[in-house]
Image (cartoon, rainbow over all chains, first blue to last red; front, side):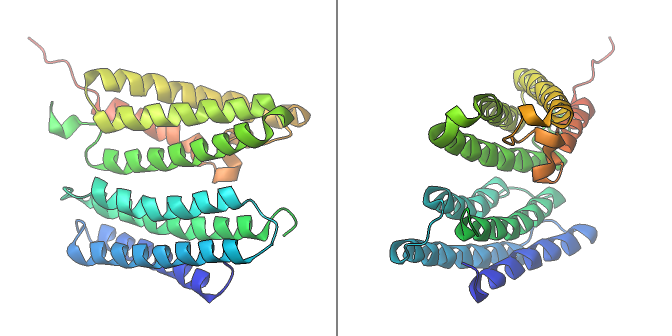
Amino acid sequence: MTGAFADLLITAGVLVGLWSLVQLVVNRPLGRALRLGVWCLEALIAVFLIGGIVQIMTTDHDFAKLEFVGYLLGMLAIPLAALWWTRTDATRAGTAIIMVIGLVTSILVLRVQHVWAGPHG
Amino acid sequence: MDETRATNRGFGRVLVVIYALFAIAATARSVVQLSTKFSEAPVAYLLSALAATIYIVATVALARGDRSSRRVALAAISIELAGVLIVGTLSLAFPTNFPHASVWSSFGSGYGYIPLVLPAVGLWWLQRTWPQSTPE
């Protein structure tokens, strides 16, 4: 949970956020390429979720497991909900929503790492 | 409904997403707090549950955007603003009475002060999109 894959996911979230910001500044509505970017982010989150569940099952490390799984499931659901919410959006608002989602994903990875560290981490 | 003044169009769609994120965060936090350590700080954890409820109501009302939902959103966001100001002030003035943080403690410092800014933005958006009365 603190390894290279978490760093990759944080970077991917920031990149999606920055890409959306650029699209927002140049007044572009949410396009197919950015949606594809969100799907890639979603795929990385799915791998992160599976890795997290495997680590829960194979460790005796003391941390809030329920909270940990809740964050992972929330991370997986949020981009999907955003894609659904922006499905008919032809304005810059859709781009702004994806920007928020990218940054929130990165913040949630940091939060997951904090939960993983446990009360004594 | 006049689409140009709908609360769930344009910037309103972004606002709904931010409210939804806070609804999820506050609900998850309060469920964990109430189910695992309610006796440690019942007031703080009930405040978290109240905040979660208000975020859910505001999210749904802003997303629906019809006439009655606007009033519900106005009430929910006004309570949210009052809550963050009152709880924020009390938690700083009497920190020993608020040993466990809620979403609104210290004006939402644990969430980057977004809980303080969000209701102001929400009220601004409601005022901006409120239907104008047409003169006869």
